[in-house]
Length: 170
Ligand SMILES: CC(C)(COP(=O)(O)OP(=O)(O)OC[C@H]1O[C@@H](n2cnc3c(N)ncnc32)[C@H](O)[C@@H]1OP(=O)(O)O)[C@@H](O)C(=O)NCCC(=O)NCCS
Image (cartoon, rainbow, N blue to C red; front, side, top):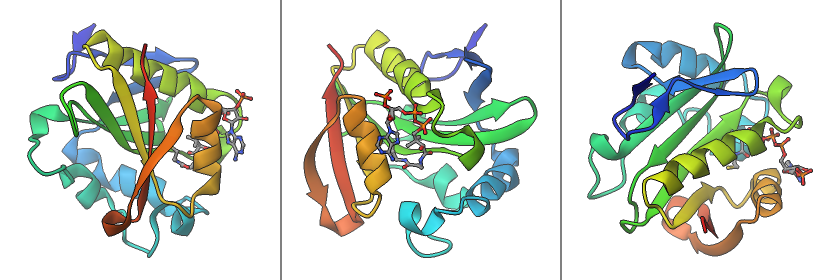
């Protein structure tokens, strides 16, 4: 098994799904995933606020692409989810998940919990002490999910309209 540039063993199998890094040429596939989300406005705001191109490019200040892991979640040949993980942000021992989404048919069956367990394990395995997740304050379901997984709300970032949830990785 190969490892991605964050030293995460890939592709990873989580239940019946496969996780691997999204490639630039898969931008249209990621866009299709976004376009198919009926709760897009709650998750991202205005149409176009999250598009595939900006998801590939987005990077917090001071980080470079070596610290970014944009992953796709595949059910066979179909892209059914995505996540954007940043290593060592905003502190060396904190990893930040700025985007994490599943399509509707894959929600509510334990897949999100299993995937987050895998993400947390990957971060912990490389010395992260904290996982940090960002959600829009309007996204109450996302907040409930994070709370169910043991995250607590730490702060809000009004400039980016995000609430910050954190959890010690123990
Ligand atoms: C958030 C998301 C990834 C969760 O994935 P999922 O597969 O639906 O979640 P799971 O089925 O694994 O649920 C895990 C736990 O969260 C809880 N949960 C999930 N959604 C919930 C909701 N809307 N209200 C209350 N609890 C919820 C479940 O009850 C479950 O708890 P339990 O294991 O103690 O029973 C998925 O719903 C999604 O893509 N939502 C849109 C994107 C989003 O909100 N992202 C921000 C969160 S990082």
